Length: 107
Length: 463
Image 1: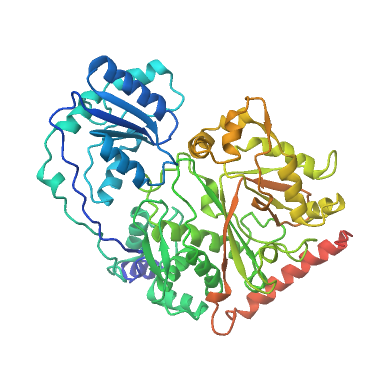
Image 2: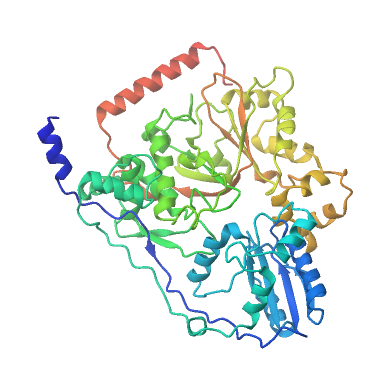
């Protein structure tokens, strides 16, 4: 290719197709749950989703509440199934029994 | 209050936004797994490394601080529809655009011009506007939808020709990405069976897994590009594989060596007819090469039991990719069918309960089954650490594929499970097969004849 032809090729406009898939979902906004005035005297559920180290970390979190906010009642539990599956019955139970939830530890 | 470890702060924020929420995340340092108690206590008492604020007061503040208007009434959102055509530009700029937007695998692509895509579409009878499927590489993110034309665009980018399109469309129709987003860094394998292997010149023989064959190369690459563009794989946003996996470049794209195998082809064992063309997909992480000649010092099946100790056995599945010589050797050992080999491995492979439960992924993903009383996991969890278990409980999950050129009796042991088998014939052109350039066909036939002559000259009897 001569220099002139190469230069011309570099300035010619080309039209190409977009390679990406199309978005499918209109995200339905979800408001956050109402907040508490205080957590003193309240019941907090701590749920381990199952990633390695999460249970031990949450045990230390429970210990922190015992040392620093003894009026807070804590319940530590494993998520029943694996971390990738939603469990509506677990959320239903917690909405009855818990004032607040710590859910983790992701990753 | 959601907690995620700090390495996933960006991912968690994006994920929460994608679900229409603005969650009040807190982030302890990463990793937590394997850290001593005193370190975890320090993390609880220390700062969130993302916000720089003390972790526990931040969590308590998250419970009690009044909601903002945005938190009370978040706005609905949707990503904009992608146009069919990009803005015209010079080739140099377009190459740069595709590279910088992360729409490639990093290697140069063929730009998908209208003319090239139209030519690609001659490889199928399907309507360009037909919706092929939806894909995502994560299980909780938005799926993207794609048509036959969008698949053809990615096929052009990969350097494929119209003759490869039916296989590429079958891969797209599987709705499975080649790079599922797991921090554990998955790899995939795709195995083609049936007449199309020969029609498009796939390599199932010598060096089938190495980069010497146009069809294997471009079809495997097309699956990767589709996963990026149709499955929305974005590094650090949706793809979080820690080391990544070099299988992701080509996804072990091969054809089975049906002609040189002493066993029935894989797809026939799965219930398909021999003259049906299909692609079977596998997912796992690793492959170990047996290296030596089967039968030299101990039979291949015994060597397999030793190699299997390297895998955590998360899925109770494995796939052996073996040279035709190994299949023949195993038949001589008394395994008349692959099913018999699968049964032998399932019954004879053993590991200690301690080794099984000691794996991080097994702990995360199998231990919940044990806690829920699901057998045999519930019983295995109660065993002493040195008790022996046979973790490949289902022989049907042990697969055998025959591939190779008979220069060495070796096999690959992979921890892959079979996910699905998809029809290729569904996507063929009206004429049944794309009419290729005659010279290319003649050249390929000459190559195949040379290989066949070399095999015949070796004196190895297949029967």
